[in-house]
Length: 243
Length: 365
Image (cartoon, rainbow over all chains, first blue to last red; front, side, top):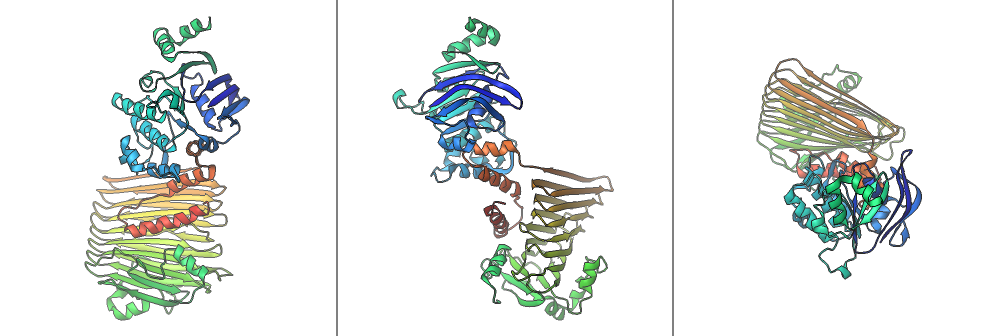
């Protein structure tokens, strides 16, 4: 599904990602762990195609097509989608209006989908204006439900969300990633950034990667890595695994 | 209705004028200095030409040049010097109500200067909704000017909404001079929409809130293209306890100049006012916001908020990540920026405002 080779990324003049290699197969969900500022969000934004993130070397291939130079909307149309940790507030733009714009010719029942994530009362509100942490995430999930991407990137879906909402968001994301389907029939893939790991109760991640200083430093079973990090912190975890 | 080319009919429609009179309860149409049509089917509401009205009601003379001074400037002097004043008088008699609006159309066809003097009165408890579409014909070659005096009288417990949609052209200058006086519990809503090129607009309508708990709300939604000079203001003078005013502007420049003025003067205790101007510079142009709030007593609460900026890249790319291309994303954000919902406005008029923005959106703003 997604294949990244020797990717180097600059923000301004500064190199923030170095020699990233990542392969995510159809039906797989991977977890990206790492300390704050290690480059996790940068990687997601680069895969999405944000122009602030300049690819200086390397290649991103999605479903066999080189998307390295593509605009964000072309990547979105090919099936890449992202849940943002801190999406912008857009004054005057109503959530319902955006959902209609995303939906285009699709026949989704927007009010019904909105109701399923308790956002039906927000359709006439300006996007993210005065939204709580949980409301922002539910709005993001709702947009993704309509977009229905094949490859879903999630940037800390549980941050700022209370326990009740984590369950709702987790279950909904699980459905987006077809976790309710048998493994062999699962087509959707995901890449999740998490610090707490709570979201993994709903996602059953296949692989974990640890990022540090703009590089992916180790790979492994996501729950084991998370356990190590929780017990020893990132520093010791990385030292151990580098041995 | 007069013979009009298809192009002129379309221009009228774009400024909210429905020649078929669908969803309109009355109509006034003036082409240059000729009054073509004046009628109203709504009981209790009269749409008359200025001349006819003065003949019919002796007492009307008291309303003339009452809230706008004839000595104010060259424009008022010019209109005051006319031997045959033109324009309309709309009277909503006591207790009358029109949710279906009246349309007033001022069409500049061939004349150099079109002048009008309008008197709009909502008697006690009446509710009056007017849409004023101002446009020029495709044949105005050398250019022209529109001088418009409008005097509004909102009596006790009455309400007037006046929605003005301008659809002039690059060679027209427009000088509205209008003022209103609002009595106890009265409401005055003034909406201004201009999405199309104009050489120059200059206006500074004033509402004097004389009665307790009276309300004035001015909303302006404008786009200024290269060559357009728009000097727009609105002023509210709060003279009675409980009076409140709100002045809202959304201004976009694509190369033109917009001067957005505003003034709220809180003269007595227990008054409130808020002024908000948001500007977006899409192409090189000027947005000059001059918000003024003036309080002279303890107990008046006034505030203002002004911001001028550009489209945020992160907002555009956020929408692109949802599959909208750059143009669609940009248009969607601009559309949101201009989306001002005006409370107290009948649905048909809000739709008309939305429709003018839609036309601009279709041409990619």
